[in-house]
Amino acid sequence: MKISNNITLAALGLAMINVTVTAQSLDDAKKAVYAEQYVKAKVMFKNLTETQPTNAENYFYYGDLYLTIKKPDSAKIAFQKGIAIDPKFTLNYVGLGAVNLFEKNATAAQANFAQATAAMRKKEFKEYIYVGKAYTYEPSRDLPKALLWFDKAKEMGDKEIELHIALGNAYKADKKNSEAVGAYQRAMNIQSNLPRVEVNIGEIWTQAYNFDLAETTLKGVIAKDPNFGPAYRALAENYYRWGSQFPNKRAELLPKAQATYSKYLDLTDRSAESRYRYLIFLLNAGDYTTLEKEALAFTQQYGTTKPEYALAQRFLGYAYIENGKAPEGAKYLNSFITGVDGKRVIADDYLYLGKAYQTQKQDSLAIINFVKGYDLDTTNTQVLTSIAKSYFSSKKYGKAADYYRKLVSLPKSGYADKFYLGYADYFYYATELANKTPKDQALITKTLLEADSLFTFVGEKAKNGDAYLYLARVEYYLDPADGLKKAANAYDKYIEYTLLKGAVADKDKKNLIEAYLYNGAAYIKTDKAKAKEYFEKALVLSPTDSKIKEALRAIAGK
Image 1: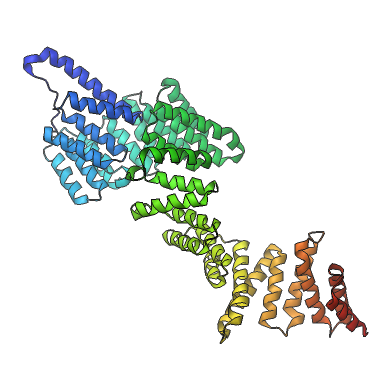
Image 2 (image 1 turned 30 degrees about the horizontal axis):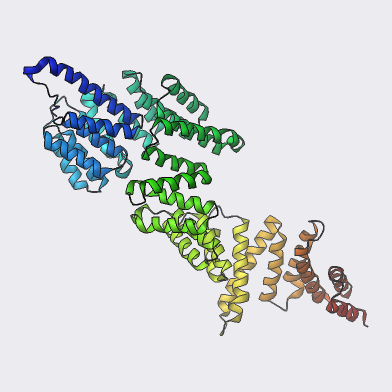
């Protein structure tokens, strides 16, 4: 690797001054990147490339900034200009290889990495570090490959700070926290004042739920450098995670998180990148009122077509829907889904869109989107529940049962899932199967037996009166002549659990009357005294019912 320093022997004195200024200026630009002051860093790199047009190193770090903020097209332009100026400064080939990885072009990446490393001298190692780093960016992450390149760099560069920081970042991304902290500490043994490293360590403590230690670590960074923005961001995120983990502290910590994040924005020029990251923070914090305001302002300023900011539309759609503005939410989510690469669409996008349509009573569109969401993530039980409920509210009980059945098959399914599967089965029979010509007796029996089993389980295990109510109805449909057995017993259980609740609510009266009348009729031939008791209880709830009075007269022989 050849580093151009623009020094000529004819002007050594001037050149020595120029070297000092150049190195300091480049170092300042790097520090701006570390401080997440990306607007400031762009201006500094632009000035460097204009005032030192033959220095290819400036273009490499300019391109590296764009990789950091996920703008590979801009990075590519910088690297290509650097190569055009000085092909022997081979780090720009590494940069092009990193861009290739963003583009999913592994073959081109390998060719550029080979070009960068082909003429390396024995003691050189920087190219290896940055090739390894190329595999650590989120869009191109391949940590095993990154570690292989870092191992190569270690042979000659074990005292290089950037190697150990890059190693720490790779381990941190892989959630290997002990290894990450070890690598960061090795970097700090070489140079103690590394605020970006201390922030990363603080973030690791947050990930490990050691919120107190994270707070102490990050406040320590701020005490040493009150203007280092990333420390405030990490501290805000720590407060948010802390409050989420301990709800009793949420009221105390969320205002702290928001105030601290505002300080971060002030220190990072409120750049597009820092404001975009703030949107993610607000989403995670569940502050949808502020998210709506900030995401709308962001999309109005930066548009909705830039790939690096595309998720802003998603956040705005989510916020609108959470804030009860379903039409606006559906508009932005549809725009997002149709405008981005399909690989960026996640199950929650369809779940929110389905929720928006459901709110607007557009059940068919809600179901379509819920099903799409489930197809993307078959472990998402929330999607399954939404699909099942949407089918049920649309009176498509057979389809509802299909999705409740998927829920019931999951290891963590609860009583509610089982009850609603039985509920869907019951209405599937009552509204569809019972009226179908010719009747599919095998399907009828299968459907009712499944409901029978589910209602029995929920009734017994959860002591649920409604389960016994529907169990009684199912038993009647299974065997209308068997009145003195399961159906009557199930009605008795329903009566028992309903009366345990105390005063009879209006919503329970109709069902209690149904239970008393059924059991009265069931016993009228075999136990008139018991039948009379059931009918009298029904009459208390419905004193003017002529049919109940007629039944009591029949029992009395009048």
